[in-house]
Length: 384
Image (cartoon, rainbow, N blue to C red; front, side, top):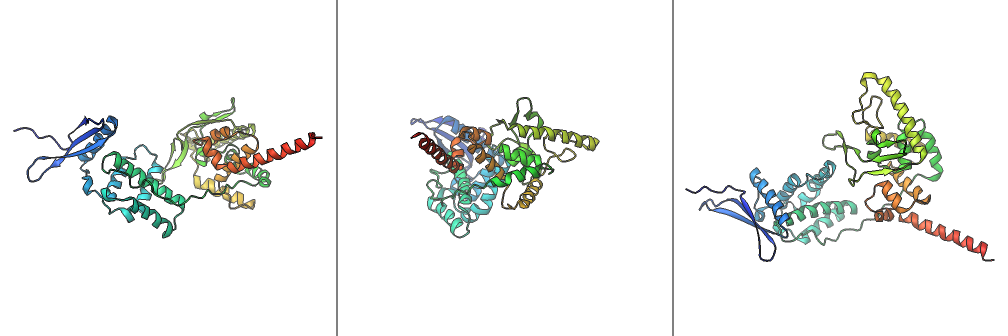
């Protein structure tokens, strides 16, 4: 008696039109015992191989579902569990929250292959009109759904992505808030005696994100060259509440050359940390070699640093100032001081100079007008 091919057994063949076909055994007919085959079609051999690997894995785990019977909720569960290995934990957590709280309750019961663009549009309209979510939140939710459906399209489960072409509410750019110029001197003075003062000072004059400042390590501080290498960030896992060192937001380390006053503050901070280490004795433990630590060498807690910052700015009469606004203050002051957009982009760790220009375009427009005014004064002085 011939040996039966196991479920999940598959092959890849190229068709005459150049596309690639994946054929997989997904089960057996209960009446005849004959194998049931699933066929999907792909643009490249690489895509076909990846799909064969993935579908074989789901069959081996017993989680395979026939696409014609699969609901959107079932597919989203598969996507969340099988396709997010490459994203950061915080991103995966956010995706799961969007799916659970917003997508599944409205569209989860719809068959994946029956989902229409109109239903996706209806979801976005409902979130905006009935639930009052912001345009940015809806854009994020739609982005999660679109990404999940794009993978379903790659797998051959659907013929097109029903999230394409959705009309989303317009996202209004928030107005940039910065530390008022007449408060900067007082803010600097406050940082001199504050236990987290060096963090605030460094952030104000480098534009580091809070997680980047708290994740700065001593091996990335070069006093001879006067540079900081920003390559990791200290991040809190929202599921476990544990702090870990992770790659940067755009995964690209960057070297920052701060003003000498910044490096001087960090040098003084190192002396203070050495004194803390001597006082702590055997209790001292700084396994991550962090620049900013608690009195026994442990990492700092984001919320604690933020709360102290809020108290400090409240004393200055500007309680609405966010910690992130220190980053904006750096960017605006750097541009107004004459730094070009590319330099500011690199220092901030933005993906492109276009994004930096879009974010701080109002500053450059003011600079253009100021330049025009100076030129007018020059002309008037020399026109005779």
